[in-house]
Amino acid sequence: MNDLVSRNDASALNPNILNGQVAQIAQTVRGSDFYFAICAVMGTVAFGTLAAASRKPRTDRIFFYITAALNFTACIAYFTMGSNLGWAPIEVEFQRSDPRVSGLYRQVMYARYVDWVVTTPLLLMDLLLTCAMPWPTIIWIIFIDEVMIITGLIGALVSSRYKFGFFAFGCVAMFYIFWELAITGRKHAKALGADVNKVYTGCGVLTLFIWLLYPIAWGVSEGGNVIAPDSEAVFYGVLDFCAKPIFSILLIVGHWGISPSRLGLSIQEFGHTTPDASNNKEGRSWHEATGAQGNFDAEKQGHNDSGSSTADATGVNAANNTRVNNRASNASTAVPANAHSAHTTGFAPAHEGTTVEGHHTDVSRL
Ligand code: RET
Image (cartoon, rainbow, N blue to C red; front, side, top):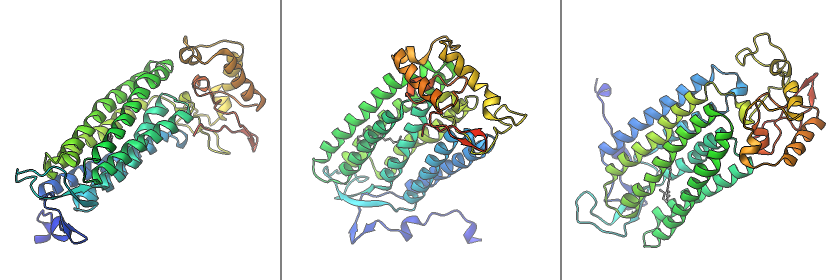
């Protein structure tokens, strides 16, 4: 019966001591409970996302898998922190008299940064693929994101005031990402149509607002030793809850009616016909189902049914369009009916087409 009684013995089994050094400023059972609660939420959202993915054809699951992966990662990170693991005792720069933060060594949760180093690029991919950002820019933004997280980690592990030097690098990196999301990304999203723009703007505004609060949490926790580790758990926990589960739900709901092929993410299973769920109940081939070649031909003749072409909106010139179209044409492949993003990305969705058992295959952007 005792085993059924709720209890949390994490800090008894994994005490606040590492390599002989005690962290006097450490979480209590309340902080640990909170971490476990968020762990459960992340796990639930991850499984929920996978369940939702199973209702879509494999070719259309890219956003589901990215989103499930980031929630699973956070689930494990929160399990680690709830277990009073994944931390290092770091000498504080500012010693405080407040009993909740008094002492010389503070528990710094490096597991948090291991989580972020994996999950923030996934969050950015969710956003940047939504607005069909060209992949070289995606890689560049993810690099800057890694700079932000790693400088934050190093700053947290440094005891002297040099920690704020690293913090400053991290802030510059974050504002650069904000600029790319708010200016470049928005331009791309607008050109892709009202529905795509709505998902991008909703998830993007949430991201900008929530991400802005992370350096504040850092400043009062690892940086300035102002709030106790339990409060740190709640501060970061609420931010992570908004940045991951809430973001994930908004994104998945928003993407439900948007085919990835519209974003230049057309993927085909080799040797397969398009499955029923992608509006192809008769099991026809992808080309037959989408009428892609017909639309592609129309585009070549200068017809564009979108009203405002991505090329115009993003400043990609006509010569580029011709070049992209010719490449696609030479490879005897097709552009999906509504894949205007081919122009945006400078990457014709099917530019390396080959033939497998008589079917054309197309290559996805990533
Ligand atoms: C740090 C400290 C260094 C300066 C800056 C930071 C920003 C961190 C951010 C983290 C976002 C994490 C997310 C996690 C998802 O669950 C590293 C705290 C600017 C923005 C979104």
